[in-house]
Length: 328
Image (cartoon, rainbow, N blue to C red; front, side):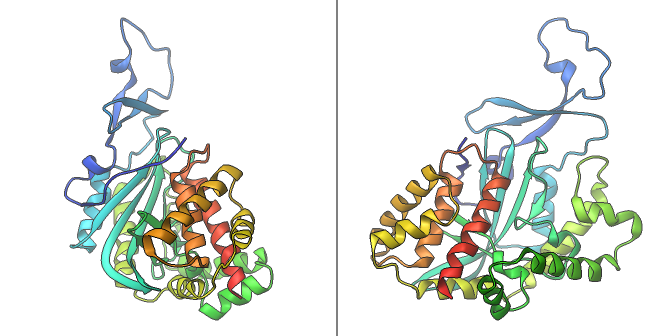
């Protein structure tokens, strides 16, 4: 499976950019004269792919709540006026939408743009999340500030933004990326913020399950998250990017080793090396850790693989941390 990406467009018709999904009664989709046996899954989640084919991504019960493109668009429109979108999706029904704002950051000689990433799937394999993590679901005040790199249409996650400071992030890397530190950090953030969430809303705030989802509350909660993202200016990850630019990769052997140790599957690692060479020519510059990370990101989200979009984000996080550790 490979993910596909639309052309970057002004966000005036989401269904033309992200494949539209709707609910249909299964009975109406069956050919001939079929009688369905009693079942709690008689609602089909149907998507129209850009090539015109219709896919049934899942069969759901009456308790299933569809999160539509129209709802997502209404939330984004309520907090941002000037934005573009780029969508990545697969034939398996998982997708990622980049909401690209005009705010930008200079990294080396490039300029990248503030970007909000929404992930979801209609098969249940990839949960609904913002910026590749569920931590924001209980932390509306602080959302990872991710960026969009137009040269390769990369949506770059704000992986270092879970950390309080730039120094703390590199201290965590220097200590071998201990999982206990991340668990303690997440527990601290969730404890502070869950206190202000009503008890009956806690499960929704943590998981965003489709089953029995209260769309009115979901829309309100999502709006608060996006509003805080739009107003947030600082990004630890952006500072990390500029540190990566400063670390040159002078030899082919060094590049091969770094990409090989980044955690990418072998075929995607090969694609990453090819992409790095192409970007060296396009940008007329020597290789550095910034280009190495972008090559890994490009391979993960454009290469053929059985990985779901959610799994690609997890692999991207691992690659980012492993590559950033070389800048110590």
